[in-house]
Length: 214
Image 1 (cartoon, rainbow, N blue to C red):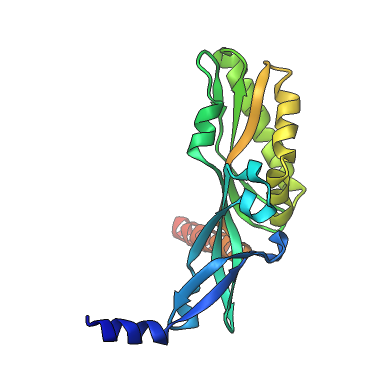
Image 2: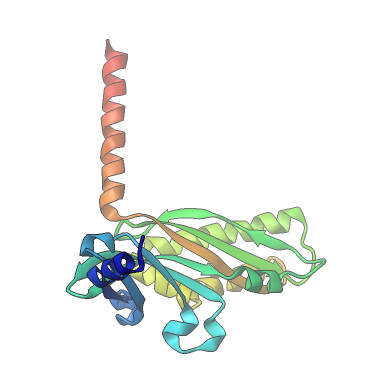
């Protein structure tokens, strides 16, 4: 492609300013280039919590947003992933101590399905039964948090450290802990997607019943 063709192609494109959801005060996340607005929808952009809050101590947390709508020259997003950086996670691990992890899928009060992955670091090596008990606390606390929170409130509980603190407060009674973190949260399905899955499951069950009756 000639330089003139590249230049003309670029002139036909326009920049769209990408904004965070209202939950994150519609802060500017960056810009993206496209010829048509519908080409922007579905793109993702990742930033750090530190960049959004101005707190450099929070740069070990990555937030990913997905563009869902475009108006004029502005692209609007939804939050889809919270994740601690690998370097930070590695810095938490100590030789001779236990690292207890869990992966829990829950439904919030407004029917968002999310996967939550907490991690607990002990001061010394815990035995298997203690690790199992700590993991049980993680599972119970995550389920309890989802049962009383909307998706937005659940995300806030993780970003603000409330869920980690709740797990720490109970799990430390099982074995001394050095730290508890939520290493990742992922949006798996939105309410309409969850509803569609449930409807499809009901249809399948009905078909199976019909076959059994023949």
